[in-house]
Image 1: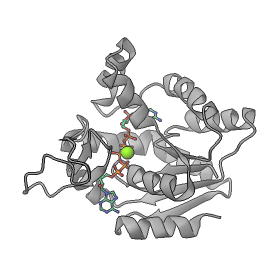
Image 2: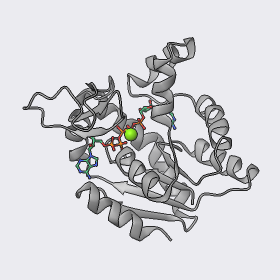
Image 3: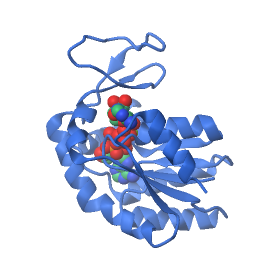
Image 4: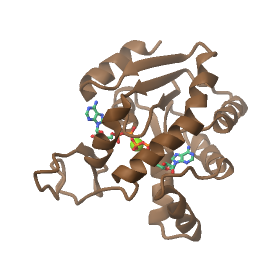
Length: 209
Ligand code: AP5
Ligand code: MG
């Protein structure tokens, strides 16, 4: 099973990918996490990437496509793609890569979230540096440690109201055409992302063929 999870910034792609990974023993590929790991390594490439993603823009297609092929090759497990493809060019490259590896995309799941929810969700997100847990925090209550492991929590540099709005504009311009690309293939489904994470997951499971 190879699943593409689509959705606007804050739709819940990361949250649901972790659930899918655990339930179906999948390999979770989050291109956002791959890019943030490169930034954390302190490399020259990482510095170039930070300058792009901290502003909420997309990194060039060629860069992300070349990073992806080796990651896909490194696993024989089913894959959940989170945040990739984000342009039609990336979708075409993914199809070509999967064909070369004698694999294919089984299903494309769009997590649908009303735009008015996006900025609140993004700005209330904290992630644990230690265990990677994604949290939705109440900003009126100070919380600095992860309730799961006690690790330090952080907010992503691109998680400000201004950048969130810009990421949404980029999503409209570059990523929504990917929805049309997949809608014609018979593998595309939509689930309502504006319900509890557990209910969203239940709907995703029901949608899997
Ligand atoms: P990426 O990291 O993929 O960011 P994104 O697509 O903007 O999505 P997010 O990670 O912000 O949201 P999410 O849908 O994962 O939601 P989450 O589960 O965390 O990409 C970051 C940047 O990297 C891009 O802007 C770009 O620059 C670059 N990049 C990445 N991939 C690229 C590519 N392929 N090509 C080019 N550039 C690329 O949830 C959000 C919050 O909501 C959390 O607080 C969570 O706890 C909460 N939440 C989740 N579900 C629910 C729910 N059902 N109810 C209530 N709260 C919920
Ligand atoms: Mg994410």
